[in-house]
Structure formats: C-alpha cells, structure tokens
Amino acid sequence: MGFKIGFIGAGNMAFGLIKGIMNNKNIKDADIFIYDPSLERQEFMKGSFNTAILNSVGEVVENADIVFIAVKPNMVADVLNIAADAIIRMYNEVFSNADNPDNIKKAGPSINILDDIVDDDNNNDNSNNAANKTIKDIIFVSIAGGVRIEAIDGVFHEKFRGKYDPKIIRIMPNINSLAGKGMSAVCYNNAVKEEDYNKVKNILEMSSKVLVLEEKYFDAVTAVSGSGPAYFFLIAEGFIEAAVKLGLPRHIASILSIQTLAGSGELLNSEEFSKYSTKDLKDLVTSPGGTTAYGLSKLEEGRIKYVIDSAVNAAYLRSKELGN
Image (cartoon, rainbow, N blue to C red):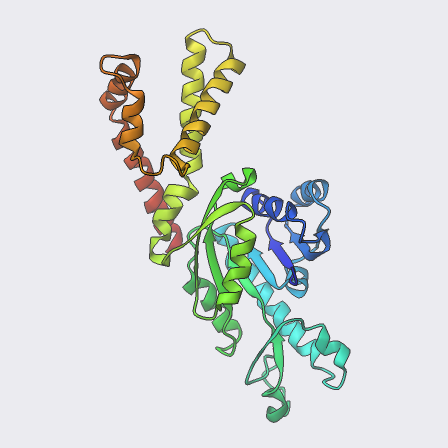
C-alpha cells in the first residue's frame, strides 16, 4: 500500500478498524503499529494480530504515516502533546547532520517548513538552511468522541508556535466495523489533500461505509450511528426475553430474534428495496386485524418513537457536553 498505519489506543473501535485492515491482502503485518497504555490490552492485541505492538505514543508517531488517535476524549490532549514532542525530536535528529542522506531517508514523506522546530529557543541554526528543511508528514485521524478538529489543531498550534499545519481527519465509526458492517462519518481540516483523504477512506472502507459530512453534524452522527448499535442490542435483548417468556428455549429465542433484526436491516439496506420507505416495508408485513397490527398497536401505546427520540437526543446533548 506504500504507507504505514499506527494506532494509539486499541479499544473496540480501533480493533474493528484493525481487523478490517488485516483482512486486506495488500497490507503487510509489518506496516501496522499499535500502542495501548493497558498491558492487558497489549497482550490481547498480540494474541489477535501479528502486528508490531509498540511501547509508547512516540514510537507510533516515529513509525507511521497515518496515526489513528483512538483513546478516551480526556486523554487526547496528553497524547497529542507527546506526539508533537516526537515530531520535534525526529526533526532535530534527522537534520542534526544534514550531509547524511541516510538520516533524511528516515524522515519518510515530508513537507516544507520555513523555520526550525526545536525545543531550545536559543538555537541559532542558519535560517537559510532551515528554510529548506522538512519534517515528517503525518495524517492524524481522531476517533475520540466529541473532540473537535479545532481542539486538536490548537494543541499542535501551541506546541509548534504556529509553524506546523497538521493534517487532521476526524471520524465517527461504530462498533459494527467488527463485523465489516460499520458506518464511519468523516470530516477534515484544510491541510488534508484529496490524496490524504483517499488513503484514510480506503482504510475505513475495509470495515465500514464512509460518509463525508460537515463537522457541525458530528454530535448528531454520534447520537445516531455512533451510539445506535447499543440501542439495537437493547431491542434484541427485549425480543429475546419476550420470546423466552412465551416458552421458547433461550438459544432458539436468540436465533429467531437476532436473525430477524439482522435480516430487517439487510432488507432496508438492499438495492432492490431502496425505493421503499420504512413505512412501506412495515405495511408489507402488516395485515388489518392481524398479529403484527396488534403488536404495533402496543408499541404505539408505549410511545416507542418518543422513547427513541428521547434516547437519541440525550446522546446528542451528551456529545455536545463532551465537545465543550
């Protein structure tokens, strides 16, 4: 594929993406790098994949061209600061001897920068040489819920004194990527070029459908597709419990309920039935005075649409809180 992919954080979302990547024969195990602060999670990933499990955020940044930030929202700022330190360190190390071509090779893909990026404010490097220097060009992809591009960019802006314009892509995937049936919404900043986006899009499409949206919609996306699978799992749980109460063995109740929900989703998503609305499909199942009509009547009595609306709205408001 020509580029290396790193993951900082290896939770369920990251696991789903990595699983999709590993199913692609064009990507080598050696091109994937993973770090998670949890030793238990590190061991789990070692047992799941033949990729490199690294020991720090800095190591991922040093090795990867695309870095997925897949940690809890409250950890993002710390991770970005460490990542920025790693970039600065690489820059200084690579060009400590500008006459050594082997060092420059280690920089990987690069971008021009007008001034030195150094920790030492008193560094007196020749400004003419500095104008021709480069730093590693990394695409940062954030999975962290509620963390806006502006916040990520702000950390880099402060760290690099405004001299580095990072490429930032924000995505909201969902857990269905574990089954290769995920949904990923994507937005990105102006530094991201079409070729950069296409690289990330190709990675995401290995496990999910991809939709580009303005960032202003991401709180709603989080509430619908990000949290949505859990709502369906709760509904499945309710179906199974109801079936057991009717006397069905639990394993039979599970098969019937899960396949019915999964099949209904496939029907909704099928090209053949795309011309039908959800109401049309519901009416196809419902006969006047029949069992389905009586069941739907009970759901309406329980104000199921109101309950769903309340759940989605609560998740939306929480996403906005996290973003602030």
